[in-house]
Amino acid sequence: MKQARQILNNTFGYHDFRHHQADIIHTLIEGGDALVLMPTGGGKSLCYQIPALLRNGVGVIVSPLIALMQDQVDALTQLGLRAAFLNSTQDSTTQQATEQALLGGELDLLYVAPERLLSSRMLALLTRTPLALFAIDEAHCVSQWGHDFRPEYRKLSVLAERFSKVPRIALTATADRRTRDEIIEQLALGQAEVYINSFDRPNIRYAISEGDNPRERLWRFLESEHTDDAGIVYCLSRKKVEQVADWLTQKGRTALAYHAGLPEQMRRQHQMRFLREDGVIMVATIAFGMGIDKPDVRFVAHLNLPKSLEAYYQETGRAGRDGQPANAWMAYNLQDVITLRQMMSDTDANEQYKRIAHHKLETMLGLCELTGCRRQVLLACFDEYLSEPCGNCDNCLHPPVTWDGTEAARKALSCVYRTGQRFGVKYATDVLIGKDDERIKNNRHHRISTYGIGCEHKAQEWRDIFRQLIAQGYLDIDPEGHGALGLTAKARPLLRGEMELQLRLRPKRESKQAQGTRKASIVLSAQDQPLFEALRVLRLRLAREQGVPPYVIFHDSTLCEMASQRPDSEAALRVVGGVGERKLVRYGRAFLEVIRDCPL
Image (tube, rainbow, N blue to C red; front, side, top):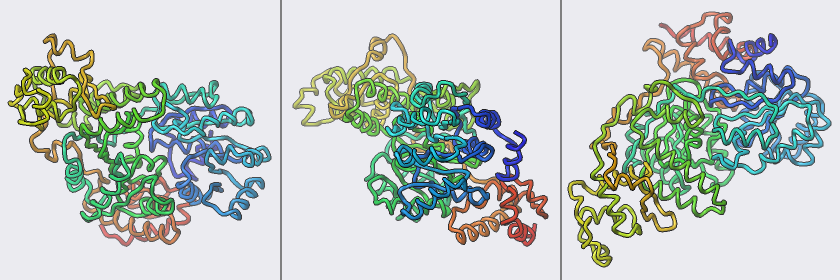
């Protein structure tokens, strides 16, 4: 472990281990297996990189992220490590050269996709190679109950069978108890040490905005909080991804589309621009993002409801990997619920899977309509409990106003019942406000007792009421009945007057304060800001010369520390976090010159 600390300090430039890193590294050095749950940005990669350097042989990292392997290897090469990858983007000559380096003991770390690892050729190569360890990244992909199931991950149990003496480590940032149990079972990690760190990302501020016109609400959020920051905007459909990217571009932002339907070369080009340029917004489906190492993503926005809290946590975790302030902002409306339920109904999955998926969506809805601390509920999904409200979500900062919605809810539920539980929200709303409509007359619903009894609320207000009743489980939506509403068992005591119901009051105008967000940026004094910008200019020039993302040179947090501390020698620069021996030699003089030339 003394050597491990020297590598941490001299190679990676960090002063001390975080979370359970030291214990995990010790377990692997001693030849044991480990399952590691650590939040995005928590330092998972060090848990296998350092043991791979200390043990005899090569560390093999199994990753589903072919498009990102190049950048991961570039970052390690910057540190002076012997790293490579094998994937389908390489020509045969490059692949053969890498295989020879592997057999010749010339590699410390090798990245491969699970499909390649499981090929007979690759397994044969590994039997001829001294192996330090196997690291299975994004291990939640093994779970059919998770949000990113990949069948090939289940076959990785072959590693335990064929390489029983090689330690294995499985890592993920998101796994509830069910997913954790499945990882252990499917990967044969029954004897592994399990390390679960806090899932909390206190630097991320959560805010959820409900109602119509989500695109305009997104623009107000960007204009007030992130005028020139890099970020990700998630949409549910490919069509919407392209529409939003075009719309943001017309608004003057650098926005790129990413989804599985785009040509592979375009996806790769867009991903490279996002990683290597400043201020780029990636508009994407969930096909984008897993394993993204870009540390300065200042916001993640959702324009549609995610399928589960796990998916939401995984996607928002791509913001603020550098530990600096970041925003997780989401807009959703009732149509999202209908669309997701229809998608679940249309799958070929068995009934048990559909039932669990339905429950996860209900839990996600519960977070959206919550009146208390969002972080407490989010962490409880992972069996972690905050004793006090977090103080850094929209509900904590600006507690929502509630009103007694008991009578309105009873009218809404009664209307659904009396119209036969065969119609959607719009139709029920039209009946409640007494709209003069031929369809209502043809169904003779202008003669029922609930026709026109809801004139005290506008149509938009009734849509809000219905949305909350659905989110809280009083109404269900039949995905095969074109969004038809139906009463649940939970609705009975409310209809009978045996309970009261508080509903959220929607603000008449969503102000910046109501959004509950903040400017997510590096906090520097006015006198240090010019130096920080000058250091960023130097970093960008060096990155372009070498064809790597700027953060591979130094993270923003490292530049921030340089700007505030103003080191005047290599010895002083060496103690800045993120400056290891190799980077000190390569870049120290250039950065010290900029610091020296920038007056206070």
